[in-house]
Length: 260
Image (cartoon, rainbow, N blue to C red; front, side, top):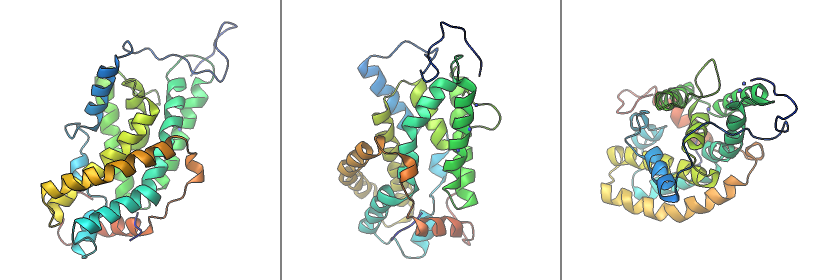
């Protein structure tokens, strides 16, 4: 069933790069291919201390109301969200966010404008989430990831409030030198893996069946990532109305295993 929450540095003289050039980030040396792949694994690891395990994003409401009784229903739900929910809009925003954050993190012309554009896009993405609980989740997870990156030596270049989840993920990809195409694919994978983890605890769904579903979803996720990395997120639309309703209803459940 169809189911379903964007903004900121100095000047240089004649030798500065053009206004539309991305200034280089001061970071660790470029990792070897194998090292870059391991950094990507670290980003999608369930050990990443951002609290993703404590949210079900409406899935708990759906299970309690009999909408996801088995693995087939869970698969259909995940495929629908990856096809036309808010997730594709967020994933398609990652490449542009990485470009803006690279510029915002430099000291060349346009850095301040880029930081403002990051904040604007961050707020726009939050507005795609209808439920205030989902917006709070995005802020909490993004703030946790931003703080982790700052503790590792990569403070986000946007001042004031912490970045929400998608923008913080883009900053992590930039700091860890992960190519945009791989970052988009990992964003989709991490979301489905988190939802399947929640489903194991909520649906009559064993861990083996969850792994079988993750394998079955993999080709579609890879194909969707290739589409989204070249897509303009402003041309996409969110058809996950039911997801939004489930997320709004979660906070009203009498008993809850997951955080609202």
